[in-house]
Image (cartoon, rainbow, N blue to C red):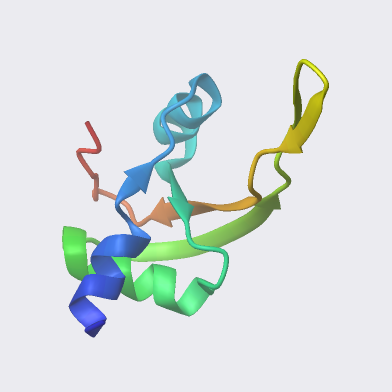
Length: 96
């Protein structure tokens, strides 16, 4: 996989929630669902290169998958990683 493919894969899935929308308005921060092996430096470089903006901070958190039952069968959704990317003054991303 080339580096361009990896960058697009890192920022392919924005997380659009009520909390994320408040972050966009208050802190100019956007949330993305990223691969578990992604690090902050990769995420920063991908957002800056793909969207052409200046990133000031990247915060990541690992989200545990929820336990689910379907009848007698118990399972679990996969774990995933969320990245909150804060942009510089005057920069925005159109995520919709």
